[in-house]
Amino acid sequence: QVQLVESGGGLVQPGGSLRLSCAASGIILSDGQTTWYRQAPGKSREFVAVITTSGQIMYSDSVKGRFTVSRDSAKNTVFLQMTNLAFEDTAVYSCNRDMYWGQGTQVTVSS
Image (cartoon, rainbow, N blue to C red; front, side, top):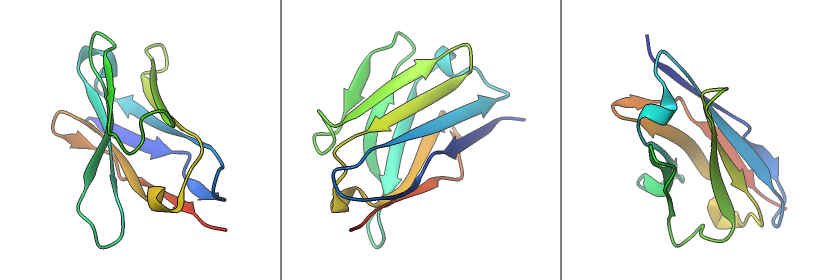
């Protein structure tokens, strides 16, 4: 059974940082591409970042320069390091691999 489990969300002030994790079981993340998405209240899901099998990384323009994706193959986990967070980064962040999705983790940026 494949499971993706996100963690690391929380409440942070503007300018703060968080590191999200996407831990997988039943599937090897490095065998495919893992994508981070987010969905803010009342908005549709949007692409955040992706790391491919070869390690190529792409970011949405809204997070480029602030967010960093990495992968730890030994832990079968993909990370999303988020810095200089802004109010508009508030959303549920989810990771995706092929047809599999995690349950999401809430990130709230508030003063």
